[in-house]
Amino acid sequence: MFHLARILAHRNKVFEAGAPTSCRYDIRPGLSIISMDSLQFASSSDDCQVQCDSEGTFNCRAYTYTSNRCFLSGDDSVSLGPIVLPEKPGSTYGEKKCVLEQCTGGAFTYEKMTGFVLRSAVQNSIMVSNPGSLGNTLECQEYCQRDGLDCPAFSVNYQNMRCDKLDRNSQGRTQDLIPRDGENYFEKICLRGPVATACKDKAWAFERVLGHELEAQLYDRTVPFVQSRRDCEELCLEERSFTCRSALYNDDTTECKLSREDRRTLPSFYRRTNNMKVNYLENQCLPVLQSCPYEETSDSYPTYTDHIQMVGITSNEVCEQFCTQFRSFNCRSYAYYSSNGQCFLSGDDRASGANGAVQGRPGLVYNERKCPAVTPPTEMPTTPTTDVPPPSTQYTRVKPRWLITFSVDYLCIPILL
Image 1 (spheres, helix red, strand yellow):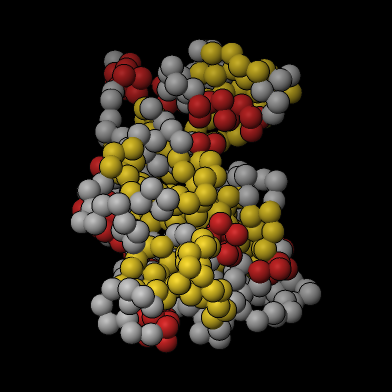
Image 2: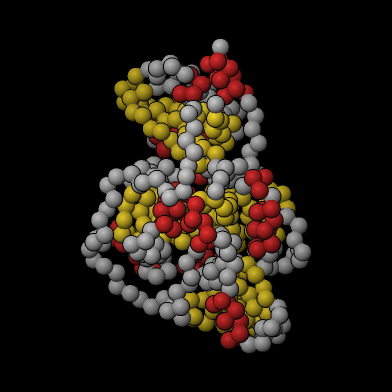
C-alpha cells in the first residue's frame, strides 16, 4: 500500500516550479524502459535526452535509445519500485535525476550568460524605477532576490531596455538556451557554506558559457564525480593551493576542472568545443586584474550597460576610477559621456560579448581592459590531479534516511520520508 501511494504521488502530485534544481541523466547501457509513452526518432543518445527534456505532453523521466529510435517514458526507478529493468543489448537507458536546492546555510546568487535567452521560459515584466532606459540590471537582480524561489531566473534585454522575471531555469532544459545578441540570462544558484561570503557583494558570482573551454594544459586540478555544476563552482571558490579563476564542468562525465587562468588572462587559449555538455565557468568573485590596462574606442558605448552613474562624473578619469572601484559587479568596460556627465558601466566586454559588446554612438568614449599577451605553460601543471571524489565540504549537510525524487514539468523535487 505504501509503495502504491508513493507511485501515485510521484505521478500526480503538482509542485511549485520556482525552486532551482540540479538535474543530470544516469546512463546505463544494455537496459530498456518498461512502459513507453512516446516514440521519437533520434540520431544519438544525446539527441534522445533532448527529446526527453523537450517532451511537453507528459513528464518524461527516462528513455531508451536504440537503432535511431528514442523510447520515452514517464516512469523511472522511483515509480517502478522493485521492478527490474529488462536487458536489451546495444541499447542505452537514461534516467533523469534531479535534486531541489533549498540553500540551507548558503546564499542565493546568479550565473550570467551573455547573449543568451531561455526560449521556453514565460516572461513577466519587472517594473523598474526608470523604464525605457539603460542600466537597470542591478534593480532587476534585487527584485529577483526579494522574490525568492518564485524567481528562479531573470533576463535583461539591453536593446529594448527592459528586464523580465522568468518562471523556470535551464536545469534539465539546456537545449532551450539559445543565442541572442543584446540580451543576458541570469540564473539563480545557491552557494553554500563559508565560500558564499566571498560573493556576497556581487550581483552575480559566475559567468557561464556553453561549449567553450581553455586548452587542456591550463587546468591545474581535475576532480571526478562532482554531483552538479554548482558543486564545481564551490570547489573553485574553496581552492587554496592556487587562485581559481575559472572552472570547467562536464554534465555527462560529472568531471570538474579548475584553472588559475580564464578567457581574459589568456584569450588565445580559450576555444569552442563541439560538446554542448561542457560548461565554462568564470569566477566573478575575484577582483579585476589591475595589470590589464584600459584600451579606448571613440564614439562607442557598451551594449550590455548594467549601470549608469550620473552623479559626480566630471571626466573620463573619474569614470574610469568609478569602474575600477565598482563593487556590485566586476566592471569590464565603461563609456564616458562628457555632454551629460554620465558613466556607462558594463560587466561585459569583447571577451564575453564579442563584437556585439560595443555599439556606435557619437560623443561617447568606450574603454575596456585588455590583458597583455602571456605565454602559457607548455606542459601539464605540476599540481597533482585528484583521482578520488571530492571530500565533504566544511559545512554540515543533513543526510535523510530516505530520499524520493519527483519530476513534474521538468522540475525534480526530493521529498524526505
